Amino acid sequence: MNMRFNKSTMAMAFRVSAIPILMNVVAACSPVNFSTVENKGPSVVENGTPTPTPTNPTCTIETVYRKTKIMFVVDASGSNSEGVYNIINNQNVYFPPSDPAPKVFRYGAINDFFSNYLHKTNFTWSFITFQGSSAQTYINGFTDQNGMRGAIDSFRGAGDGGQTPYAAGIAAATRAIQADPERNSSDQPNYFVIFLSDGFPTDYTDANGNFKTAQMQSDVAGLRAVASGRVSLSTIYYAAGNQTIPTAVNALKAMASAGGGQFASVNTANNQFKIDDVISKTEVCK
Image 1: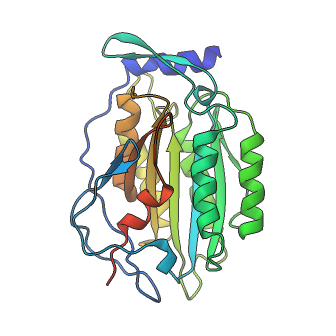
Image 2 (image 1 turned 90 degrees about the vertical axis):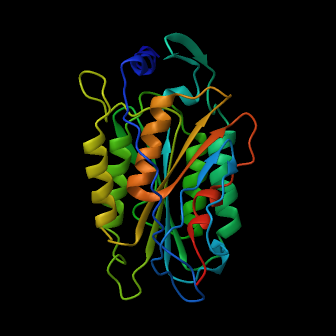
């Protein structure tokens, strides 16, 4: 509990440079595969409602037949289950637990997405959480629907606690993709990494409380380089209420920009958010 309070109060000193969200489309769908296309503009999801990107008609993941790897990297820090104070605009603001047991938002959003697409035989799945100072891999590499069901259910029963180590989560995702035996197969799978957090990154912060932008960008570039042109990183900030932590929002927006994905901000107390909003809307039919 003390560790969590110290993390949250760092927000007063935590500074993030504004970085434009330059959303790069990394994949487009056709009846047989994806190909790179140019994005027509940024798209951000706020409070569960997507702001559409002006593009050609979009297609859904349902139409994708190429081998596809879906990876969730999920915050399991203490503020999910405990109320914390953050200094926002020089005021000490109370934030209620963002997603306490039974993890209605995290479990619900991930489980809904999985349930909608578990029939896709060309999909495999991976699940990672991060808390304290490290990440936990629930799946050894990528798995089929049975392995993913077990991972989601295990996550629902696991406890939340400690700090918010973004870098550990990104490193674990990079290792998992790098070790995938199908990474360099002839059909070259695409990788979609969905990163969810309710707080700012404690391991991307220097001694003065500044966000380590260069380190984050280097880590995300390393993630994408493992399968060049075939990895995207989308990020989701969530909080129980209308208050947000600006430093966390800016950090996650910057990560989505560097990762060629999309960003969403969600109020877990009242939202219609779907994981599809940060994946399928980036695909442009050709």
